[in-house]
Length: 239
Image 1: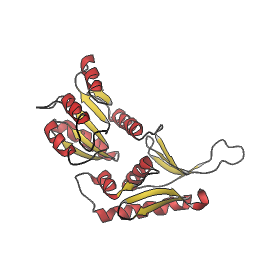
Image 2: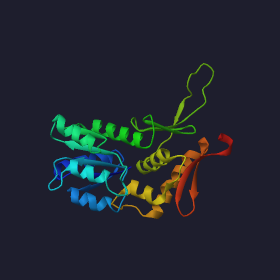
Image 3: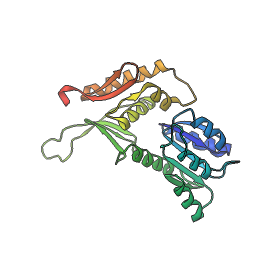
Image 4: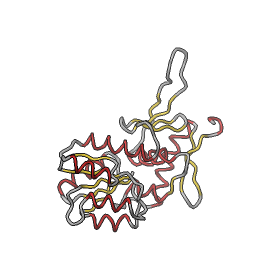
């Protein structure tokens, strides 16, 4: 998932970015609302984390402008960070378009859990476990596997683990959140790298190929859509 972090404190931003990157997010960081508006007028993100106490335009006003503008990410979930625990700040933030807020200082596991919840709501998902066919991806427990049919006496089939590298995980998570709709190759590239373009567009195909070889034995195909991207489909014998 691609996340925009808007935070003017370099030390705080570095810590958040490191933690979120380790959790599999592609994190792009800007230090002001003005820069965020410039970026969001041109690029799309899956979620934004915005500090209230920004220089110039503050985080509340930035959120209000995002909800009232024509930016590509107008509907993206917004989580506000604040050092102020005043009821008025929380109410104003939610009224102006924020989806959630956290008061500093906070623990990284809670931030990750709140981001997962925001992403589920934005994609109409109801659980931390994403499914397609027998494939399961537990975004909270960081476990991937294929659910087998239950045997006699079992209420639930066993989960066969599927070993995924960090970028394979990111690709599968994005595909599952979008399924059955296709995901564009450009969106996948952004979800993998953000501004830190460590891989080329052609390298996306490498991760897709690796992932395909791990899904097909379990009846799930990863189809290429010429000129666009990729989509998960059930193979005929599993439909």
